[in-house]
Image (cartoon, rainbow, N blue to C red; front, side, top):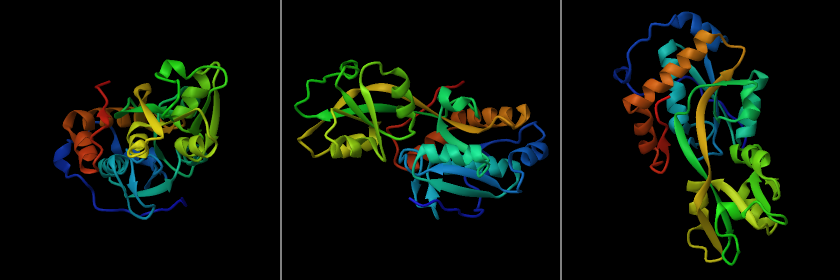
Length: 260
């Protein structure tokens, strides 16, 4: 999926969702959006968090980015990708000011994360006749697990699996099927849709991880900027903003993260 940008757009939702913060928003705007516009990196490869196209993205991450820009009084532009790895690279290379990624130690060295705003689940899929019955059965010699390269579950499984082998591809379920692997990994909603109607595959209902999705910016930003993002995310969770955005985009399976 090619990257794309879309210029400033009318603020949504209305200002009644929140009240002005006491922070120095002018200084934060200069720090977080030095070009004069807030450049948000959007991962269209995660359908729970973003939908649409590079020219017309939508979803909870787009709504949050618009609200951050509205609070700061700057326009917003979107840099869209088809994978979290590419979104992360845009953030660290200076192409974007804001990102929406899963919290992970491999990223935390370069990205200052807020507390999570959404929690989603990572699940496994196996052939229908597989002896694998639970997530605990996966980490065994000879088991190959298909993952999306650079995804949160790639990072997690690479760090935690001791015996099974991680096999990377454009999508975990695609490389699982294409290479006849023992296990495929992915996000619950798209994996469930992938398995639906197929009698040759079986979903392991037990999640192997909770994926904590957060807002992030580079660690070069001021403590005031990072605190502003953290406080705003907490407000948007508490006010119902995040829940409403998820519902509008049809993502009722995702859970709003608990208060920090």
